[in-house]
Length: 265
Image (cartoon, rainbow, N blue to C red; front, top):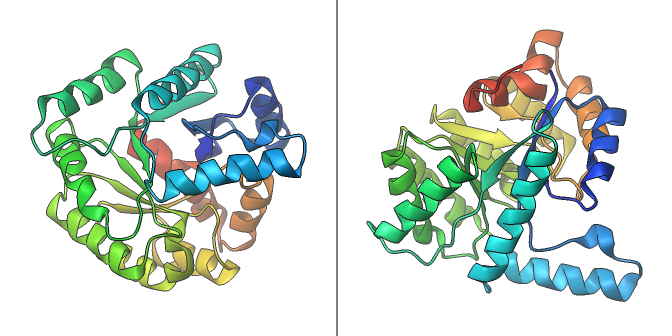
């Protein structure tokens, strides 16, 4: 089974299904989005969507209403194709530790929306500590996996701070999105030291990063595309090219995330 462990809602959703069929992907872990570059018809419209994305990546905007709308969009896509999609649910970063509203939000994600984890979390540099209430809530709530964007604008110091949280909440699986960007080498070294840390390969900075990750942590490296920003078919080819056995390729392409999320075949 091939499972894309990280992609975003693309509209119309039928286009995503067609892409999965052509690429040989059985399931996709879908994440909500407030940005839809696939709907752009020209350069100006695309730049407008990318400006929104940059604001989100820097945690400059956190619109609750828009986040709820995106969550409904995600939930609808999963309900339309429950055999092809599962989801991770986003959580605002405005909650303080032990805030009952945070627990209510997560309870709604898991029970009402049937989400398998929390994320994607996008933060600006120096903001990693905003995640601690999320980590504590995930730890208390059946060890929910957390997916964190670790590409730009995060610095190496930010990634190291994220690793401290990963160690502190050792029962919480933490997925380091996009391999740490230019800090991929240090990120791989950190993840080797924590059994609850996982590496998402989408937007890998260089094929050296991909091949080293597969060699060093084959049981915790996760195939992903970040679709529509990446091409799932090309990432599948890259994984197959840089694995030394079919057994390891099967792990990376689907087995690892299937085990982590307890997905049914």
